[in-house]
Length: 465
Image (cartoon, rainbow, N blue to C red; front, side, top):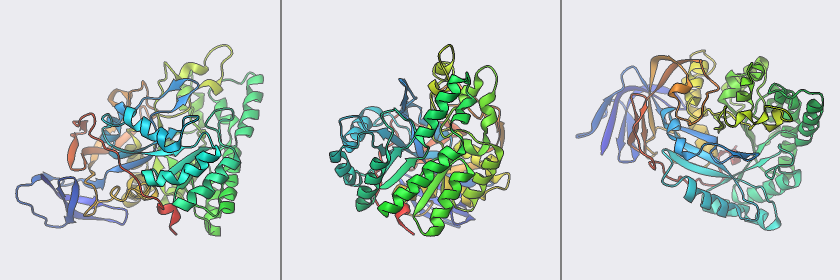
């Protein structure tokens, strides 16, 4: 089956031009002016932009916090409607089990036959026994060439000490594994949290007070030094503040292979949201914490100037009524609120409306940040680009749409959106996943199980200079 998208403006990380896109079966066959294909379904994209399907390298469908679990791949149609066609999920290694074994078992039970967009996985090492360290290169062989370690969350089973991070960096570089870190100083957070609770400062706003920018900056610097000692690249996830950003920039300028991302909610929300009345501030508890306007502006500059190379969602679907209230009541505090923001569906909408439309980033830069660069970071060599031979993951974007973001039109399976009431300019109108139309007129029309496992190759772009 062939599909010919005519008369649209094709946007890539390198630029944009009026061109046609020819899809044959699951791949892009050609991109250029005046294309013809007998028997093809023709779609007129006049006045619209044609983008590659988004790659969201930071989602949590299996995250458990103090016994509370997020929504899973059964809500991945939200990604499709939001113009994202590939998700990469973090899988926490189960205690006493192997890295690859944990991913494979999770994949078979929670993703295969359920996911509605394509998917891959990062390993999260939680049990750094010597035999587990030795297993790290096997991740590359299995098609999962990335690993994350949590420097935050003291006392949780997934917290990683410096020795585990250093060993992971050393062993990972042998096989081209990209090591990622959640950079926050766990001890600083622990001390501040206990002191605030003792003072009776227990509401959601104090989540931000317990983990100020210095907490993130210190851990970012420490992780960079660990990477320097290992002579290995490092990827810092969800950078939120100018101090941590300065550490990434300085290391890069010294010649280290240090890279990082930020997330959509850090670009448009701030710590004042944590102080909303009626306990609604709990909706905005995520880690690292939301910052102030000066940090938001620094992040916009960073993604525009390529100091950070991706914008992810860090989607984490907890209900407000059922789960975010775990910190409410006598003997409870902000420390008991499940962390995370449900933001899978609106990543592209936020970036277009508040990035492109407000002149903060170009359309080409948006494509690089939301699709092309994350594909390269994770070794997905058929994703994130509109070019012959790549998977036919294509978004036809209507720039004239105007609306308001609301949980009422959200498919994430939770009872709120952190972007509730935000104005929206433009939207994905039609989305193809490997040549199959899964979104039409901005509505999901695909099927459960349309997504398939996509394996990554080692030595991703963090290894390249």
